[in-house]
Every structure is written in structure tokens, then in C-alpha cells.
Length: 143
Image (cartoon, rainbow, N blue to C red; front, side, top):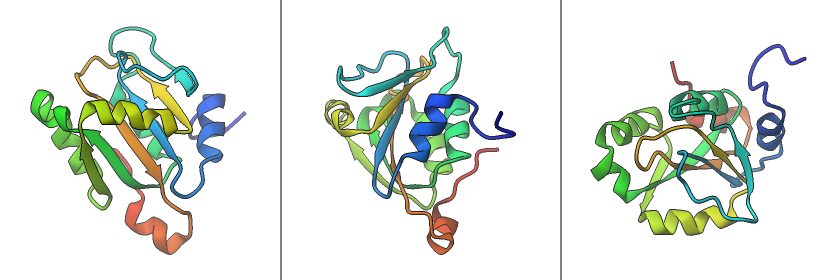
């Protein structure tokens, strides 16, 4: 048994399989995951697990170079959007229409669905490479 980090076998393996520039999404309960995209469904009930807790777990094992958010997030869920911008200080942030984020979801390696009900609580994460010098600028930890 793993001593620490993500215990979920599918998530742990999926993150371990990411290479530089590979993409994955953490989404809310209502995000339309494309049929042919691997979906790791964690949603148990409203808010369980939360987006923030799920992201915290993922970031304990993944180095993120860039994020992509839906433009609607800033307008509809401004506090959530601001929190994300505070978490990802060193990462490039691309903001696209929600319809485009849904299109981009067809190309990701996998999607983790949470029980979150915050509107537009979705993020596309792009993996960084692992050399220590590069990792220092992009490693994120949520307290």
C-alpha cells in the first residue's frame, strides 16, 4: 500500500503516465465528458469530493506548466476564479470560452469528475517536465 499521496489507483496511474505537455482536466459534477475520453468519476454527492480537495491531491503528484480556464468562470464564480489565479502564480493561464474548453476536453488524456457544484469549476492542466530546475518554478502546493 502507498504510504502517502494519491491512493486512488486510477488517478495515481494516470498522473504517473503523463509526459511533458500532456493534458488532463479536473471538472465539476456537470461537465460533459466526451464519450471516448477516460473519465475517473469521483462524484459521490453534492460537494463530495470538492474541486479544491481533488486539485490539492493532484498537485501533490503533478507539476503543472500551464492551465486553461473557461472565460465564464471569472464572471459567474469570481471568488473561485480568483482562488485559482492565486494558486497558479507561475503558470501561464489561457482563458477560453467554455465551449472551447469542452472541445479541448476531447484531446486530454483523462478527466477527473468531482462532486463540485460551483459553476464552471473546471480546469485543464498541462503537465510540466520533471527536471528539478524546471520543477521549482511550477511546483504548486495548496495549504
